[in-house]
Amino acid sequence: MIAPTEILVDHAAQVLTLRWPDGDMQRIGYVRLRSACPCAACRKIRLDGGRVAAPPGVKLDGVEAAGYGIRLLFGDGHARGIYPWPYVAELGRDDTDVRVASLAVPVSRQRSN
Image (cartoon, rainbow, N blue to C red; front, top):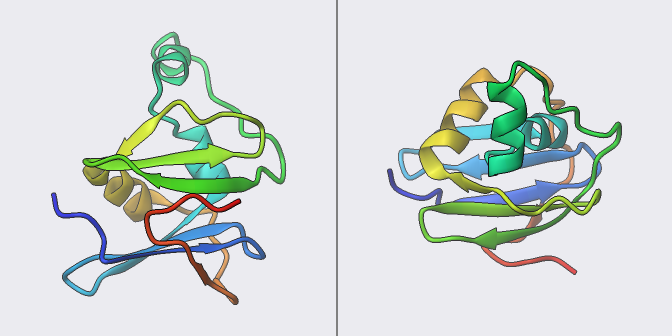
């Protein structure tokens, strides 16, 4: 899968917006992203029948390029999972907790401080 052409972080709405090469745009809420973390520890919780609970009001402190996907750095200190592009696209199709973005700040493939 090809990477998005643009990645925007909207801290006010707590939404990550991705624009794909075909023009499609997806908005995924921070809570959804944190709850769907693909790291080994979070995957084990889900495989054991549990649920990864994102802290209320979870913040996104940074976005880093990781070749085949992105690493998200959350305010609760969690930053271990790499989200492959196909997985991110699937999360965007299934996302139901997104609020409409009002103010987007570009951070294309770099960590915000």
